[in-house]
Image (cartoon, rainbow, N blue to C red):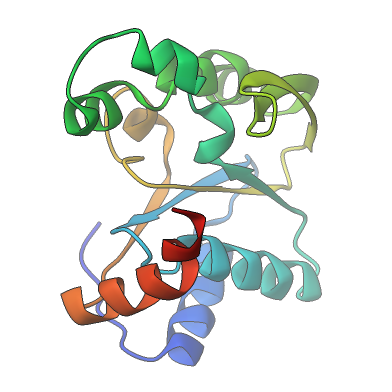
Length: 178
């Protein structure tokens, strides 16, 4: 509906729990959590899921990284790394076809999926989803707020942090990997 600016993490978490409880009706509620690189999407999602569960709310977390195309397929495209990542890294159609559209149609989903296994560079990791009409579904990841996924999100949370904080977090989290 509108923008909500919250500065502290504690206040953000409390505000999100309250907003989700207000928005939750008799159907599964799908909440998208996206943001800039190293903005804390995964950490916030984990804390939000725990807070919702502690409040008695069934909650399922879906990571958009689980719907990432295998790297070997992306390299075969022959495009620049930036274009490849921005345009092709994720498989939004798989997320929509296997999760979001069936959930919107049936208001429940009990299914075993095969998602991204980063160690094998394929989609062989099993992911069991058990979602009922009472469930809050938290979908988190970068580049999430684009078609066709955007059409299935009931609430959207976008996290931002300063450039300096992005660099600080990236040095701690990612530089040792490269």
